Length: 75
Image 1 (cartoon, rainbow, N blue to C red):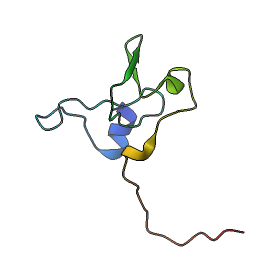
Image 2: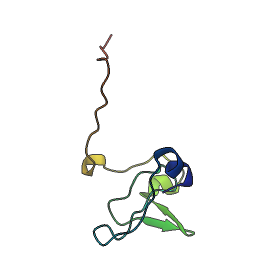
Image 3: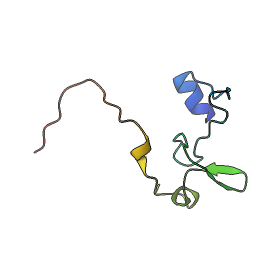
């Protein structure tokens, strides 16, 4: 987890027996739920992020997040 993310969210990435390793992409900062790509000691979620983007991950493993607020209409 980046220091900026820790500061904003007040979170700390601490390994536990239930979650032994928490890895975040050095480019897009998502939590990596699969084996990461490691290049020059930096951890990435995919080869797209290794190249600087765009990210080419399949986000189907993540839960959707809905934020309360007004409905946005098309058009």
